[in-house]
View 1 (cartoon, rainbow, N blue to C red):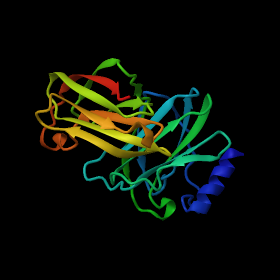
View 2: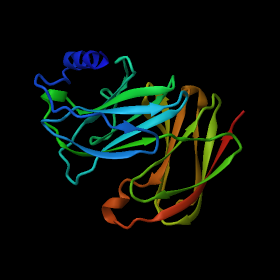
View 3: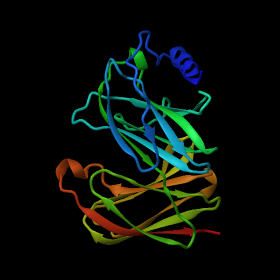
View 4: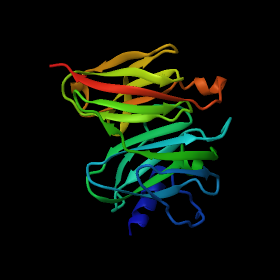
Length: 247
């Protein structure tokens, strides 16, 4: 029944094809999974079953993986078990060949994630993609967190739930990377950038944010997005994060 509801909703929004696509079972996704697949003209609506526990914050990171990929405007739509749409990336402003959706599961159980392309059946975008499911590390005031990142465009995610102003301090430990730290306010599943810290020689610094501008903030740590264009070596950097609130 729920698939008929989903099909009707997609047809009304222009994402459902007028002809039947090849039937395929929906792979199951959990936190930590990374899958690769392909959007084609014959298969441009790909469903995944998502399992998780209530209160888990899930980040769905969708990225075109081909050099000079023709997959422009990849999109995601998340449904509950009754086929009701919860969130989508259709109106999100972001990079041309990627999309990110953040959602806190209200109940323990299964959900459905649809990966498609801009304009659905009317679109002509095709190409390979990678879908990564991440649950961010929660940063608590006064705690320090030691972590490591790779300079291959893979991001580490952290979550801050504070209603007062706060700062996240970054301290380099070891390795080689041009650190790129961004703070986002989370609104309706969309990441709105509010602070940034970066630099090729950066060894320490902080990003500060007003806690009252959102119920939840996401911090990402990774290499400069431009670094991989000039150097394809995979390097590791060790670092420490510390959350400090301002009373």
